[in-house]
Every structure is written in C-alpha cells, then in structure tokens.
Image (cartoon, rainbow, N blue to C red):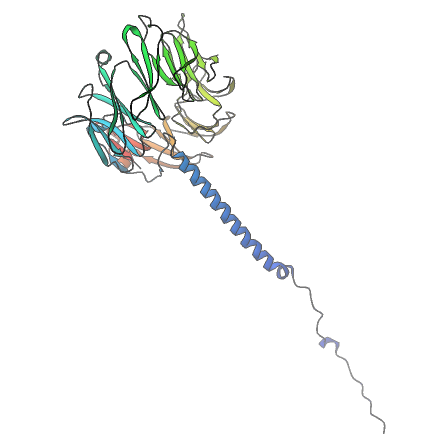
Length: 459
C-alpha cells in the first residue's frame, strides 16, 4: 500500500525575528549611571574641600589686626558704651577683650569688655598722671595689653605733664607693669615686647626693650652724646625682624634685637619718620628752599631717595612680603617698590584715601570709588563707584566693607567687586542720622559714634 503524499505550505512570516543588538543606552546605561554618581560624589568632595579651605582661610585672617568679625546685611546694635567710656580712644582687642581707660567715681580706672557682647569683665583702679581728661589707648603686646594715657589738653599743658604706661592681663585686669614717664617719652608696642625711649639729664636718651609681663629690660641703648639744644623729641619705630628705629637729633639709627646700633641715615632734625612694610621706614623733611625731600631706609641699610608719603594700610595680611607701597600725592599715584632694593615696580593712577591688602590684592578707596589692584603688577582688577568717596575700608575675609557718607556701609565681593549689600548704619544703631558724629572700624566691628560720645558696636 502506498503512502499518500501531501503538499505542505511553509509560512515564512511566522519565523522568529533574528536577535537585534541592544541600543547604546541599554548597553552603557549602568556604566553611565555609575559615572554620573561618581562625578556627583567627586563634585561634592571637591566642593567640600573648597569650602573647608575657604573656612580655614577666613579663620586664619581672624588673627590679622583690623579684620572684622563676620558681617552681613543684618547689622544691628550689639552693645554700646556709656558717655564716659565712649569718649576714649577705642584700641585693639587682646584675646577678645577691649581694654579702655575711663573716669570713675573713685578716680581713673582701666576696664575690660568682651568684644562680642560688650559685657564689662573687670574694672581696675590705676594711678594716672591726671585724674581727669585723659586719652587712653591699649594695643596687644603678645598676650597682654599695653595701655598709655596722656592728658587731653593743650600742647603747653601736655609738655609739663606726665604720661602713664601700664601692661595688663586682658582676662583678669591685673596690672603687670606700671610706669610714670615724661611727657616726651616714646613708647612702641611690638609683638612680645615694649620699647620705651626716655630722656635723661643733659639731653641724653635711653632706649630700653622691656619684658611686658615683668618690666625687666632685655636690652638698653644710650645715646653716646647729648643732643643739640634745639633737638626735637625722638621717634621710635618698628624696623622689622625685631629691630627698632631710634630717630633723634638729625639721624635715624636701627637697633638690632640686642640693642646694638646698625644702619643709620643722616637727616635734618625736623624730620617725619614713618614705618612702611617689610622692615622699611621713610623719612621726610623740607629742604632749604622749602621743597619736600624724602628717603626710604630699607631693611639692609640701603637708602633710596623718594619724597612719597607713606601709604597707610589699615589691614595687611602679609601677602606680597617683598613689596612696599607709597603715595605719590603730587602725581596722584600709588607706587609699589621692591623691598629688597627700592626699585619702582609699578604705578597706579589712584589717589588713595583708605587701603587694605588681602590675598595679594590691594583694595584702594578714593574720593569717588573703591578699586582692586593686583599687588604684584598694579593691574586694575575691578572698580566700583562710591557716593561721597571712601572713608575707611576693612574686610571679614569674605567681603570688602566700605564706610562712606554720613553713615553708610557698602559691601563688595572681594573677587570681581559685585555689590553684596548696603546698609544705613544710623538705622542699624537705632539713632538719628543727625546724631552720628562718625562711623569707624574698631575692635573687629563697625562702630557708630554719636555727638554725645556714645560708641555703638554693630554686628
């Protein structure tokens, strides 16, 4: 029997499609997700490190004299002193304590206030040259405060008076050293030591470096011969590296850390000496024809002729240590020089009214603007107009703060100069604008001083 045969139709459309290659996203999706997560983690780590570095930078600046406590657009009155205390010069805090002198019911006293709260920490009675009308200022000498008091009186009255010198423990108010000095004595407060120049018989002078805690002399220098009859009172300045400039009777003499005489420069007796940065000092006097003459005495004793005025830098963090700055007022220019040999490095067409050096940038206030310069090159980085001109500049390490006008503060970004905030200081201090005598930076804060001598700390 033969088998039957059939025709079978094949349906090719029903066959399964050949496998396709997965898309790029499917093939690499996991790797991309891992990469995105890794980038995000890296960005967070980098941002964290950047933020930490910025916090360390700002924290380090807290030890630089004149730097403000953190400040923002929410300024308000934190504390205020009474009429008596506010009438005296605000000094520089020592270990967070502002030491001041003032009149008390029982005589003259020194007082310590917490700079954060204004709380009175202690009151110490002291023997003063005159019981009333004294001007007192206190500055750090290492971990202690050195305070001087002189009569707030006409020049002829001061000439026959005495001045007082005290060193004080800022936390307890204990007086460590107490000296009564001639009115023409000169006192220089330096880190860890005091230098005092006192006149003696026959127009001789003695210069001593004192231990601020004990008053013991670490070294003594005496002028080898009497000064001329018309010699003016000497000056004592910081010459850098622990050295002291003693200027008297037509010469400026540098004393080393042991009081041994070193480099000197001969000038006229009527000479104005000022300290520059980097251990340099400048001497200016008028010549026979009334022309202003000047010299810069560098750290190594070399002398550079320059009639420029010294540039007062309110805050100096020590960056660009190999440069010094002067003000060529006649040309309306700021001048940078090498601290090594006095060579002129650059000039900038700005007439400074206030100055601050931070992180290699020189911030300069003028009669119409605030300008940021590269301290290395003099290049202008940014400029912002300021109504009425700049009175003072300072910084908390995050923004540049400018005081101007009757009672205004403006803040700018340190890099780029973008405006951050602007504040009416009279309103912040809760006083009428007409009651404001001046605004100023002191004790790491912005202060408003009223016409009745009340000092109001803002923060």
